[in-house]
Length: 302
Ligand SMILES: [Cu+2]
Image (cartoon, rainbow, N blue to C red; front, side):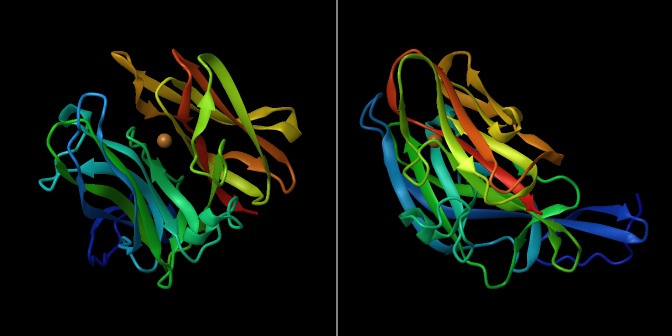
């Protein structure tokens, strides 16, 4: 590993300087951005959590004006930086970041598309995503980001919290292959919620591929009682593209502790017009009408 002679640091710290090819250097910066504060009202009782419902913020801060984002790590924190988790009552129901002037790959023509392209999201499991070496999500000076936030509070006092995203990014002048986010959802272009029966269920939604290319990173989201979300290529004999498996809290199966991700160069290739199927699998003790099955694919368009 060779160090570049000059490392420009502005608004950020260089965390790594790694050679990618003979004579070329990749410079990676890290920036922690906090959104908020958000005040979540106190819970009314044990089964009546305090809710901060779908708060939409426009033109929120980006880590950089002109760059390639190489990873995103979500969190919810208190003003002193401590993580705000269920241990103290706070919970991320979800938050979604959208890029206003980018076209959403699967919902551009619905009301959801008005907010732009959905490019990152998190539930309480707080799954980080990082792209393989050489790939990044392009940010340009004219981009504008929106943030949709939905938070919950199980404690009897109100909580002041911040949505926090730690970004790593590379400067605009480096040659980085682009990724385009593609959001697949059982309740596509709706509020993402759907219903399951008690017991095992596998619910499908088909995507007719309109962003052909190489999927290089994939993340998934289910709710408590969830087993996994998976994407399969039905045009290639149902071959699995990625399965994101849920790890549930052994003490409380309503709580998702983590979701596995897929990352590779490539994870899989998809071609124009192929049918990619989203499977959302639950093994629930009871029926529910507010579960989710989402996968976010980052595709390097061919
Ligand atoms: Cu959710």
